[in-house]
Image 1 (cartoon, rainbow, N blue to C red):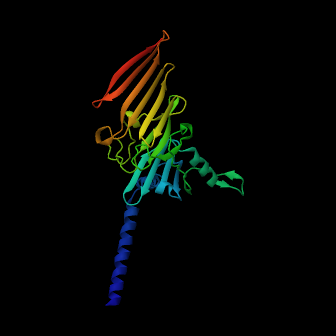
Image 2 (image 1 turned 180 degrees about the vertical axis):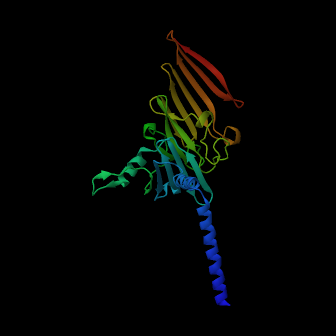
Image 3 (image 1 turned 30 degrees about the vertical axis):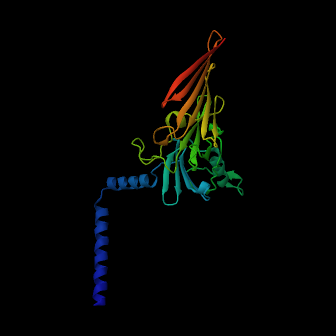
Length: 278
């Protein structure tokens, strides 16, 4: 009986191989060429010129990986922590620090040359500092962790350039929303009148008072206008940050300086004064 079983299984295997061979043989040359093209496309889904970075450390407790395709300016971050946090983020550009790390990893000291850092997967130390204030340079594509909403958990911050200033995109890795309809599965940045306007650089500054839990934003607009905004998390709907005071200083053509002050009154920001300095 054992011999019969072995012979039967052998015949079934041979029949399967013959059937597979017949299917392959029955295909035309054009069909086989299309199959090869599809296989190549699947194997090289993202196309030529991609880099993947995987952290060998745990910055702020997160497993971090980055996918980057320079030609299409595509930079995707992936954060994992424990069983509850698994986030994907579309970044603005690859940080300069990672570019340096990549080049160093691909450098051959014996040949004294760099290899082309394309189509590579590298395991690197990815340093993402935890900071108390935002003073990064968007030209370097800087990144950091910072608790911008004073909830005890650091958000992931990406600096990106604006006109004469730096803006900061803040991603709430713990409580953020990744069920958006525009880019399903990707975590959206914190927005609104406060977190959508955090600035730095030449014409802006954002200061965080961690004791009083107040955000102070100063922004120069053009040559003659300065706007100062004070905001506090917890004042808006669902605990969102809300502006509770704003001062707009504007220098008029007749050299008069107009200072308009707004304050939060009954949940609405209202003008409470207009001072003119001649």
